[in-house]
Picture 1 (cartoon, helix red, strand yellow):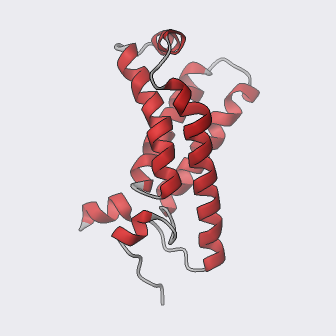
Picture 2 (cartoon, helix red, strand yellow):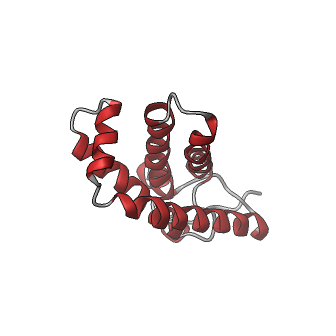
Length: 145
């Protein structure tokens, strides 16, 4: 039961308008992350693998695949609201690596997109998919009285 709540749970959001807002943010963010960033990294190009190697990861091919899958598959899972919290956690870790690893010495404007995706992912770690996600079908939320 605890594992089920961890995988599919989240804070209760009661109003239909708030749940619609979560749905819009979740679908838009997930689809853009998957289609504009993740799909370009699966399979990872030699340039991307080289960039991962420059950060200092020991097996750059493996970590390049992990980053690409985190953005592509994580984005799709986020968009449909399935395993929203774990997917958002993986996205957050990937974005933190981009911000503090790859773009550590770059100006803020080069970090801004990864920071935005990271903070949106943090939101979904805390709240979950909302009522309009597959997670809510698997683990329905109880109404707050």
